[in-house]
Length: 85
Image (cartoon, rainbow, N blue to C red):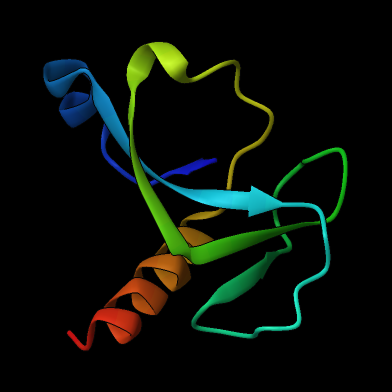
């Protein structure tokens, strides 16, 4: 999961807003998916932008990598495009 919500929101609400990640190459392109380039994940990874979730903080495990600010911005741009915002 790529967590999009801010730490202060996560702490106060007890939830996170996240999008799914996969290591399987995706046929759908942007805005539905985005290949991550800058992360330090063990495998090549894609964000499934159309699969947004709200999860309890306790369900989140350890951190595997960090997306660049540019990648997070691109994911949010994809969400806005999907929502027509």
